[in-house]
Image (cartoon, rainbow, N blue to C red; front, side, top):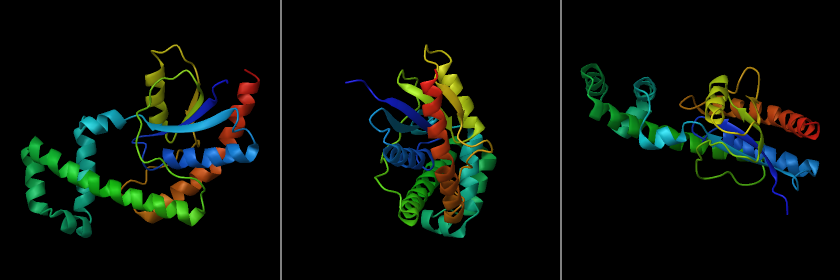
Length: 212
């Protein structure tokens, strides 16, 4: 039996956007009757960096300040803004790392909850993946779509040293913005954008492969 050709969707952490794109794509391929030849996958181009904590300080601070900007988050995490600000001013790497991990965990759970609500709200069939995968160069990928231009550039860097040459592009020209830390309404809009863009990209990928 021949292996299926894979159309992949990539965001940063393979948590909020790309797993939803994968779910939408799998259903669309079933609707087309093309799921015997094609399948969908998702990954994140910074999953390994996030797991090891090898995250730029600017991103850590963005997430910490995102927590400081919400009283409910500070209360739940026990953050005392003056103490957090002092750690940042002093350049206390240990404290900053600890604040970052706590805030990131909170926002990831919040995003997970928004994701579950979105699946139910939009009636998306199937089950979302529960783990995150790092984007790596693979021979069965025929097309890979990043949620943003930054994701696309990350994919290109991953594939440049390899012998594989899939189509690499953004899912939408204007990108699908990261709704991380931005609340349910923003996340629902991101999912709507994904649902609108994925079928067109699937059609284009299949048509492109037929003529390759």
